[in-house]
Length: 242
Ligand code: FPP
Image 1 (cartoon, rainbow, N blue to C red):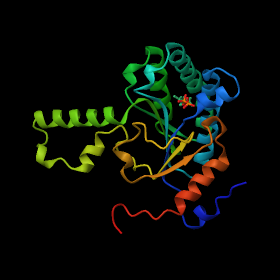
Image 2 (image 1 turned 30 degrees about the vertical axis):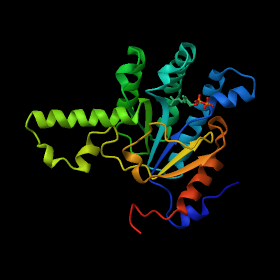
Image 3 (image 1 turned 45 degrees about the vertical axis):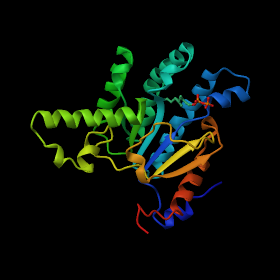
Image 4 (image 1 turned 120 degrees about the vertical axis):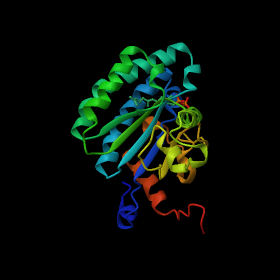
């Protein structure tokens, strides 16, 4: 079993880990199952890894559950995903409560059904005063959309005379992102082997370390997370310096 040795000794546990939960479809195909079975298996992994991440001391976990581009998938798959989100949110409430996890949603919530929006609001409300790990669930999320939204919000502030364009700083811009007041991700993990960022946390990922593994998301285990953290703990982060 992989151990946390290096990361623990060097204080190398990343504060903010982000995960692109990819490979559900391929996992199902390999087993001759419908793609939706892969998403169901992926949802179980999501719950397990979330609990584990909070127990090993990660402070922020952001998972990519549904992108602004995922609506292009066949209607059957999109409908199944919406049902799955609903079921998972209801069921995972207890898991997350026991672990004191604060649940937040990043993305354009208005794209979801009234029912799902209500559940999202309830989930955020009941967990907002907890003290544990912050879990950001990215749903109907796109990095470009988020940046555009931030630019529009700043434009409004300029037009109403609250600020002037010359005064806008990187910090002010970050305050208009869904992740306002949160640290940028230290480590982005992509299971499923694809080496791309797929419109995820485009602004926040400027200096994130990337860890790509061929393991498909439903198979992603505690050991895989520890391997990613060990990889991270050995990186020499320079943030553009030398
Ligand atoms: C990408 O794999 C995965 C998704 C689009 C869905 C991810 C959703 C879950 C794991 C459910 C989590 C539930 C909550 C409430 C957060 P893919 O279908 O693109 O896989 P492929 O690349 O193998 O086709």
